[in-house]
Amino acid sequence: MTNKILILILFICWSFSETITESRETAITRAVNKVGPAIASINIEQHISSFSFDPFFGIGFPRDIIPMKSSGSGVVISPDGFVMTNQHVIAGADRITVTLTGGNEYDAQLVGSDETSDLALLKLKGNNFPYAKLGDSDDLIIGEWIIALGNPFQLFSVSNKPSASVGIVSATHMDFGHQKESGRVFQEMIQTDAAINPGNSGGPLVNALGEVIGISTFIFTGSNHAQGSIGIGFAIPINTAKRIARELRSKGRVDRTYSTGLVVQPITRSIARYLNIPLSEGVIIVDVVDGSAAKKAGIKPGDIITSANNFPVTNPSDIRELILEKDLRSGDILVLDIFRKGKKMVKKMKLGKYKTN
Image 1 (cartoon, rainbow, N blue to C red):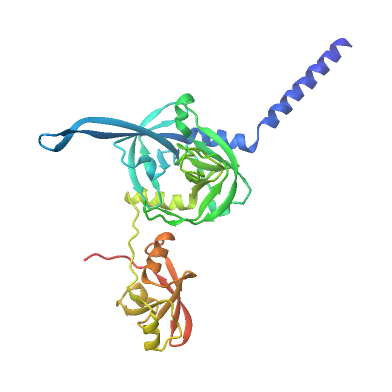
Image 2 (spheres, rainbow, N blue to C red; image 1 turned 45 degrees about the horizontal axis):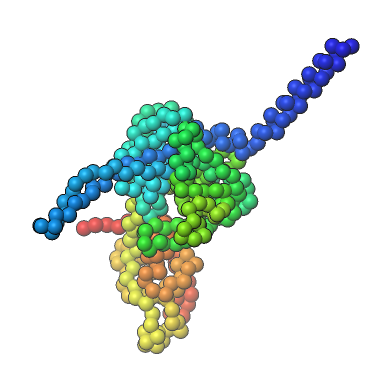
């Protein structure tokens, strides 16, 4: 009888232990375990020249080459060793090395980078690398769990493992437009409250299924002096990153050249009065190049463009800015609201290829 009671107690303890173990394993822990091996610490080395000043000749000359080191994050996206990260992480690098989970270090070749989107693609020598599955950022749900993985404050070097922070998708389609100082364009960004800190840049945002849905890029710090996360971070949608990565892999660069064949000028009050146009905003088409995208779309001189892709157009630069901010390329469609001889109409123009003489 005593033995049976003892066996029963042991069985209950074992069952309870199994239940606790199972309760600790969640979708979050499974996602981290799934993607963790594909996280990369991106290590940058730059060679900076120091200068000495000769007061006699009044000139400066190089004295020493000083190695400067920094780091960021990345994610392996294919078994043959392609790694995605931010362009600002590797900008100006003379040498790039990548450390993967477990401590293995590899020299990385820069396949290509794109300052406008702030994305870069690296290549490691070898095959059979652990890699992350890329998800669909168009399928995000506001409030769903999300995980930021990476190398904040160079902590990857302490344990050769990525750090993880958990939050939710706070918002999507966050448009910051064209950043005049850096030249970057941040459109359709994902907002999250998962802690993103210095060093997380270039690392992945992962959903609960273990799929990469974004590339962590920047944070709001709240003040010029704050250095850490205050719960407002932003990531490039993975669908945008996929498109950029494909172009970098095939061409080593992103080709944003295009042609419309339009020659336009803004409508002023005097032009409106002279032409008897009941409009004071928009741009009037003064010429259409033969064989151009505009010609093929049926656009004519004298037509007035009032909006493009539902964005108001008041001067010629509005169309260029829209194409840049929406990352439209040759082959993409621009929907134009046209005013012609008192009638409103819509013309769909397929952007043409830019031809050099």
